[in-house]
Image (cartoon, rainbow, N blue to C red):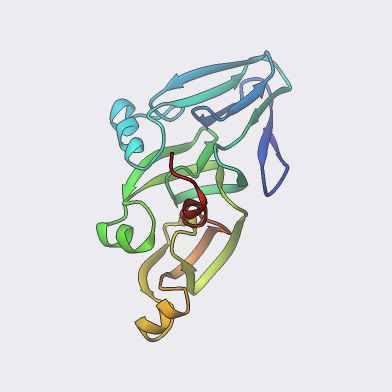
Length: 227
């Protein structure tokens, strides 16, 4: 299977070229176009996985869909074009075992061998980090495709790294984070416009986004006229 990123990073779409027998699992509604030699199977579980209804319901808590679409090539050289709901970037990550924790709505697609589940990140982290209490948990081996609002950047954390709240896209589960002040004093943190931040520690890959939808909403909200 081959992939190509189109129109990065403002309005990224993904084009896949699948050989006969190859499959890709995508978010419901992500398909833009496809060739005639592809079939689509809609289920509530990962391709070849287990869990069914229970995992589907759990995914809904993280902001993902109950169903998953599995595209399989029945002929050689088949093309599939997909895109995320939000304007922004996509990124490709190769998994060789282990687990990737993904913010809700940022999982876009993955190959068979990657299980899509949900994990609880804690009430306190959710309230103060600007993220959800439930996250998507991707585990196994294969190719993972993520999306976000704004551009996506990757950093190899080895020790400590700080991200502004609400900008996390995904991180390997070898990394942990807690909520802290941007500067030494709480008053200074808020006067500087940073407030609370997510402080990661450990070793692993961390993906973060350049923009956030709540920031866009707070900017546009006062300018919109009430009906």
